[in-house]
Image (tube, rainbow, N blue to C red; front, side):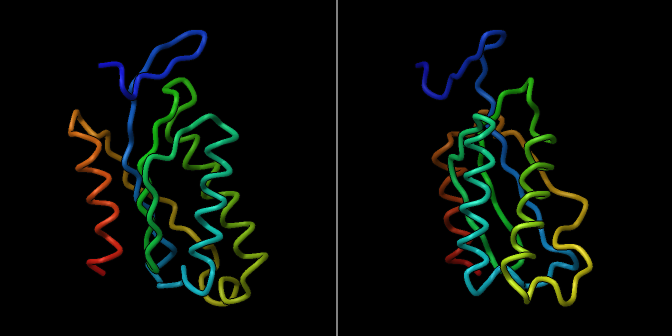
Length: 133
């Protein structure tokens, strides 16, 4: 019954967000180890801010993230931190990411709450993205 419920000193919450974002011009640049490194960076940022990564899939031209984050911290703040750090580190570590797009990520992203849908369905959808591409 209490599955997924988290709390801090001020709030008890059960907030799950499905976030999708793309490289600039939706170029297929998340390859050649960049995909693996991006997963590490996303998990690192989330761990630092006590956000729980529930599912993560990196495609060559977009990313799906299912994450639970403190509503007082905010999903927008978390995504901004992930995109900022990952852009900087990936562009330092992978030369092919510095050539064409002037920035790695678009300014926008998609976010949706899971709206009470069973998390297993959302997780399966995200995991299925790799197989359907």
